[in-house]
Image (cartoon, rainbow, N blue to C red; front, top):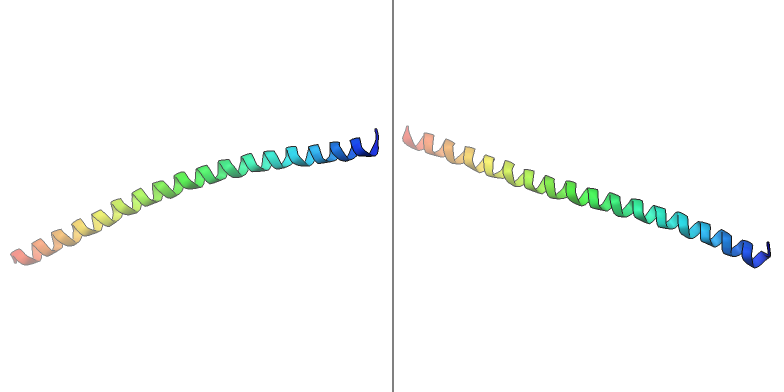
Amino acid sequence: MLPDEMEAEKNRKIILAQVDEIDILKRNVRELEEQLRDARIRNAELIKQGFNLIKEDLECNHKT
């Protein structure tokens, strides 16, 4: 194998490894975006529950 061919083969292997790493990173980003979306939805639910509890508490205190 000629030196240029060896260099080309080395670069090809590096590029293939980088492609695999990029795919893994893309998958990780997608999963993290899903987790963030789910966390935001859960936070909104908890905030709404908190407001409902405060509202109920205010209504009960107002009646007494």
